[in-house]
Structures are given as C-alpha cells and as structure tokens.
Image (tube, rainbow, N blue to C red; front, top):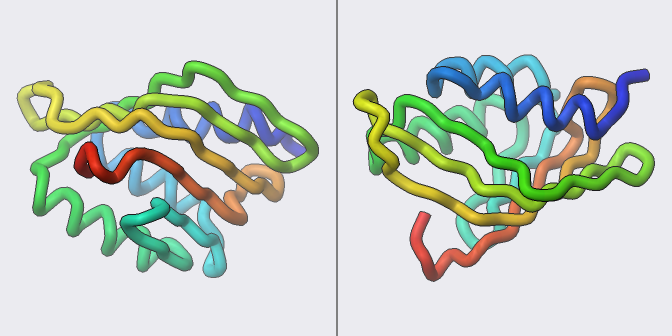
Length: 125
C-alpha cells in the first residue's frame, strides 16, 4: 500500500501548472464518496460536486493555477495532517488569493477518502 504522507504531498505537487491539472488530480484521487469539506464554506461528496465547487470558485476569482506550500505535515496510519498555504494565481501569474490553513486527509492508498480544511473564513475565500 502507498504511504499516505507521500500520496498527499504528491497530490499537492500535481496541482501545477494549471487549474485543469488540479482538477484532473482530484478526479484521479477522489472516489464517488470522497468528502471534501472547507469548514464554514462548503461540503462536497464525490468529484462531480467538488468540480462544481471549484468551477464556482473560479468564476468568482479567475484562477488559472494553484500552488501549495506545506509548512508542516504529519501522518498516523492513514490520516495526514498538513499546515500549509494554498496560493491561487490568474493567467498572468498574479496572486489572487492566499489561504493559510490546516488540513486533514484520510487516505486509502492513492485515493482520498476524506479531506477537511480549516481556515479563518473571516479573511475571505
């Protein structure tokens, strides 16, 4: 079986260079029952709902690419915790939004069973 920490870090690296790459990675790694929660903002189940959320986010902010800066990460069993900054850029590479957050991933090999992010929603999303 795959190492959960390595799988989560690989997932973040797959987000480059475009939003389409991020979505393709989510599609490969999500199951029909993957729960993705952005606490205080959204909760999706499966890739189709996650894609609809990202499509809506991209309409509010014209993101073209994303990058993840992992500050700290730890794993116990199949659960991975990440302290990170998610940056999203426009087509010219300008930073549109930067989100500092804590994330919790539950993995099954390379597949994401659940993904929960916690961040200060008062700072905007």
